[in-house]
Length: 298
Image (cartoon, rainbow, N blue to C red; front, side):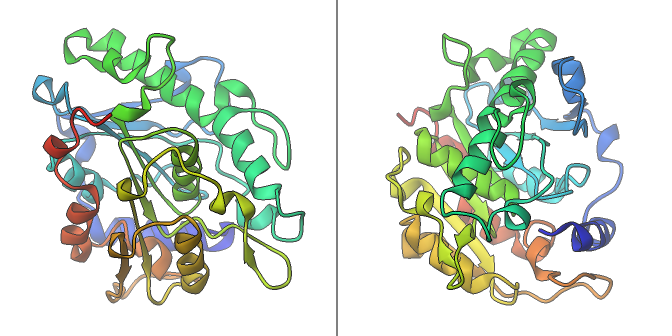
């Protein structure tokens, strides 16, 4: 999502469509990234955790990555719907400006893969990301933090013996740029499931061709991929081509077509509506499935 429209669209939808007072509820925990890892100095919007208590210690963890400029707008209704399916849920802000779509289209075909590599793992390229501020490092740090605070809840079970994320126990998801990061991770690691909301649409050249990384072999089997797009969002055709390039099964690609609330604004308002509107709750449940069916996935 582009910067000039993101705040208007998301803030309007949050006011209209999400419940208030979530921070007062005992199952919600907000953790500053800098509290989990003092090396993090930028993009310090809080992580939001729905831990579910001891009953969910064996459940997969859903990691949701926001879109560009969206770090402070956790989609609480979506997150609670996912938690209602038996998952633990972690909203994970990260270094999310500028967006891939703002940097890479005029550059060589490999730009978006290099961009996402820097964001996910740290490093330099089209953007520069200190390793401590990478998505993988942030995720590892907050899991360790939660395990220190709540050793009885088994958070260490989401880390491999070497301390990296145990991807087969993790569902990666996100909106817009965050969904693109989730797809990039799922290409490289065998995650439990991947659920994409309106991204990626990485492209290059005057014909707006899908970026090469979308066609690469995936470590996550096709049956674990799910994705949606809104029929009226600006990039819906690019998304359809990208989902085909990713080899997402046709019956795992959903097309949302609901109306907008009256106050929604911006030049692409349907784009963010898909993770905030309660009208899509049944589709959300279908995309994530029941956590009990995902436990013990290799």
